Structure formats: structure tokens, C-alpha cells
Image 1 (spheres, rainbow, N blue to C red):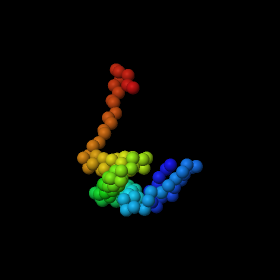
Image 2 (cartoon, rainbow, N blue to C red; image 1 turned 90 degrees about the vertical axis):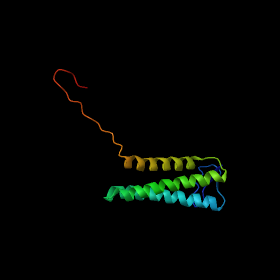
Image 3 (cartoon, rainbow, N blue to C red; image 1 turned 60 degrees about the vertical axis):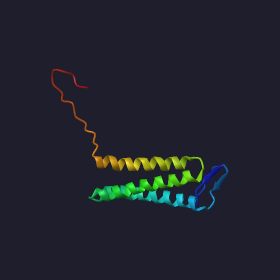
Image 4 (cartoon, rainbow, N blue to C red; image 1 turned 45 degrees about the horizontal axis):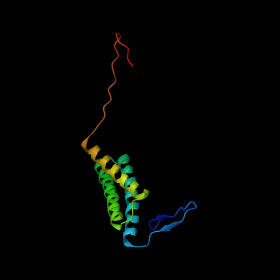
Length: 122
């Protein structure tokens, strides 16, 4: 049996599907995960089109915080982890790590090897 969050469209693919009860915790998780996804996309758009990167960093970092908040609430419900919880956790980690790495200025610099006539360059 597959369980879905409230406000989700259950795609059962022939399996039995059920929506979690309408408790506050599952409604909160459903809304916060959707808000985190929207903020993540807004952060990407801001990063591409706004000259000051601080705004995109704030929005993306907030998106990661919301992802972690939804995971914390999900853990407190007592249900075992599912694919959705793992994906939300990974998304939060990647978003926050990306903002932190960009703010630290981590760069990978590739240098081109100079060829001299006496040796063979690969």
C-alpha cells in the first residue's frame, strides 16, 4: 500500500493507494514541501536574472530550511522514511550545501598544460 500526503494526487499504478489522514502534521508537511520546491525554483531564477546574488542565496537557503523542517515533522509522526522524505532531505542538503559552497568561494581551477617541442603532450 502506498500512502500520499494531503493535497497530493495519488498515482496508484494498480497498487492500493491511500492519502494520510488530515492531521495538522501531514497537512503541514504537504504545504511546507511544496513551498520549499517553489522557493527553490524562485532562487534559481533570481540567481540567473538578479545582479545581487545575496537574494537568491537567501531564498535557496530558506528553501533548504523548509525541507529540513518538513523532515523533522515527518520524523516526529513516527512513520518510517519513504522516498518522498529521502528526496526532501537530499534536496535540503544539496540546496544548503550549494549556498554555503558558493559563499565560501570554492572554485575548481583547471590549468592547461603547456606543450614544449621536446616532450609529448597528452
